Image (cartoon, rainbow, N blue to C red; front, side, top):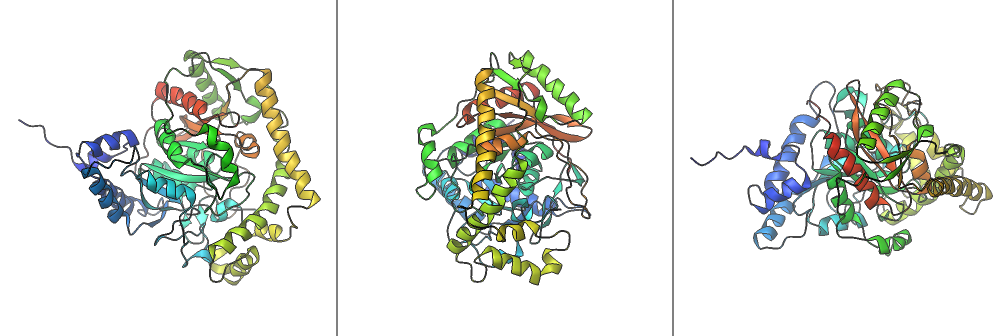
Length: 501
C-alpha cells in the first residue's frame, strides 16, 4: 500500500528553511500551502486565551497572491534560491511599500503606509521570500520612555512570551522573537541598537544574529541611532540565520556604511559542526551577571564547548566594557533626533514630519499612547543640539572607540576567535506599573552593540522553565565564524523544546 500523506499541519510544523525548501521543490507542499498554514496558525493561536501572545501586529493582505506567484515561478523552473516561497515576518519598523503599515508600534504613524520597501525588504523579495506580516515591538524600538514595557506599543498592545505568558518576550524585537518561538513563520527580521535582537531571542529560546554595523542596509528602517542600528535574522536554528543573513546583504548606494561590506559578501555561508575544535574562546565572566542559576547553566555550556574541542581562555579582561553606558545614552539621544527627523522627512507622512510632531501627537493622545509610561527619551532627544556638538562628539568617542579598542586588544592579546558569555537572564514577569526596571543582570549585549561588532545568541538551556541563550561575539565581519561556532554548539545540544500553545 502507498504510504498515507502526512497532514499539512504535521508536515509544516516547526520547519526549517532547508526542510521547507525540500518540500517545496518536491511539490509535496506549495508556497501557498505554507502561507495558509502560518496565517491560520496566527489567526488561531496568536490572539487566543486570557493572555494572548500578540506577536503579529498585522498580516499581509497580499501574502497568498505573492505565494501563488512563487508557485508559478517554481512550476516554470524559475527557482530564486533557498528562500523561494519561504514565509517571513518583519518587525514593524521596517518599511514595506505595500498595503501594510510601518509604524514602530506608534499610533502617530498609523494610517499612512510607507511608500517604498526598505533595501533589505527588496533583497528578501528578490530572494523569493513571502512576507506574511509585521511583528509587534516595544514602541519606537524601546527608546521612548524611562520605564518602558518591553513588547508594548500603543498600536499593537502587549506581546507576551509563548513559553510563559505572564513573562516578557523582551525587547524591542519582542514580536519577532515570540512569533518564531511560537512557529508563526519560518523566520523573522528584527532590529537592534543595544540588545533588541539578542535579548528577545534569548528570552524566547531562538537564534538571533546582530550583524556588524554596515553588513545590512539601514535605509527604510525607522531609526534610533545610525552608530548602532542594524537589522538581523531571528530564526529557530543557526542554519536558517545564515541563509537569511546571506540574502539580506548587499551594497546599498543610499547607505554608505554598506560599502565596507563588499569584500565580505557571499551567496552562502558553509557551516561545519566541527568548528569548535581548536577554536580559542575567551570566557567573558565580567559580562555574565550574578544570577546563580544562569551562572550554573553557563558552566554547563562551557563544559560542552570544552568537550567539542574548544580551547577556553578563562582569564580575559573585559573590565571597562560597561563603563561607557552614560556616553552611549548620550550618543543615542543625539542621534535619535537627527536620524528620526531625517527618516520622517523622507517618509512624507502627511502630519508627522519631525520628533517635535511625535511628542505633540503623544501628548494629544496621551490616554492611548502614554497610559503606562512616558516619552522622556523623545523629550531629551528633542532638546539635543546638532551632531557637531562637543558633548555628542566626546560621548561618541568614549562609547565607540573605547569599547572597540577594548575588544580588539583583548582578542589580540589572547589570540581569540570569539568571546562567549550568557546572553541574558530568564524572562522576568511583566510589570505594567514599574516597567522593565533593571532586569538585565549582565552586560553581554552592550560591547558588541556599541562597537558595531557581530553578536549571535543560540539557545543554551533552561533556567527553571524559561529559556536562556549563549552568546558568541567577535570583531567586524566575523559573522561566518560566529555562525559556525554557534552551529557547532547547537548541533551538540539540540533544539530547545517548543512552547506549549
